Image (cartoon, rainbow, N blue to C red; front, side):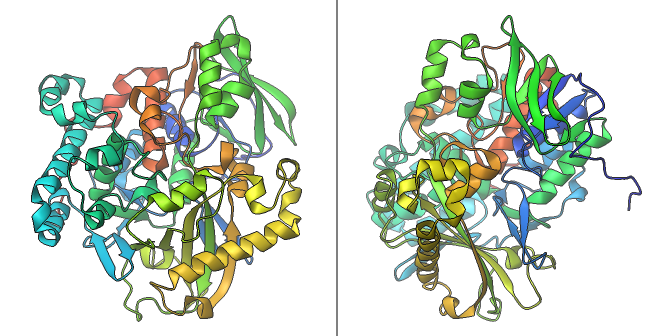
Length: 549
């Protein structure tokens, strides 16, 4: 074990000039910071929270009896040559520094419908073969669907090897034709079987859009990512953040928490630094010719940057961005032995029927669905050796569902949300309990008698997310995953302000842990040169789409 003293991350700052300042210590910002620090850049990371990591953090309850993961519930492509290990390696973190625990390769996601279940297996070919066995009459459509997935996978490879476009683009005609299609529009060309369509789109909770609105290209990218295998880092999402933070610091970088950036300073169209507030240090100004913003995109461009430095069309576009729906999470400790009950290391996705549009229709009207979709993550089965998750004999579960983000839907006013008094509002507390009961009742279709075994319960709402990470609309997913806000229509890492770069859930690489980390690499490459991207992604060592057990 290292004898090095942990650097202070709260109250000391010995310098005011850096090569790069990163605003926001979310997983994207930390990836950018660690990647640049590993290449000799002098980096400062600022974040308003008392813990770094954004959604890749854990929190504790009842002292430290329970440890819950905020936003990392599973992640794909973590094999030795997978995307995530390659990004970490590019930040100076060895593969064996994080233990990646794979979920059940035969069914890492189990889709649960009334009277029917389907487990999604690891591997492109295995998934296809399982569908062909289940729906032999739909062979033509299934093959077409996987042809699209294959073309998206090949197209994504151009990112780390631009020369490959010469031979890959001619192989991607189906992708080119449906690049701007919704999932529904493309599936209409494959099959009309409701059950098959529900299985093919059963992981929509990863991007929270119904088939009629979700980007098909984005859907394919997400599906391909998880078909490389579904993993959980031993110790939870905080391990990613801690390792990246340590990489920043051991390479001479500085992380300062509880420091709220109030202004990104610009002179003559170029970044000069940032102004921030810290209770111990007061109001401070720090300088750099490069600033990477890992904060909420609307907050960054509409509040932190003076509007005179941005084009009117940029400001309008930013104001008009549609944000992804928000989530609510019910955290549970249960005294039920899940292994004895026959449960495997799988995520359960519970649906009331094969039509996903109904629940999202309610959400877009800022109402709670009558029959919600529920995701069940079982941290104890994913990370069985982690004694911090819960007391002995207790299983750590999370129940998640899409929720309205408007204060009114939760019995609140905008003012109560802004001043923080919402947490004591009786109507809000009553709504939280009702919401928990609704999800628990739905979860009992998979875990019978669940409500009788609960020994601990807590609830997170969209307002919790906004309070801790400052996201618009309480979403963890950035701007909506629709064709109108995907590919080149999604913000890139570069802005019209010289030296100001973006990363995070709303940028072109997409949301989620894998999207944010990739975005961090893109921002680092924008600062230090595009060869950083190729070095980090290890040209020629990419995993294959047909990965099998």
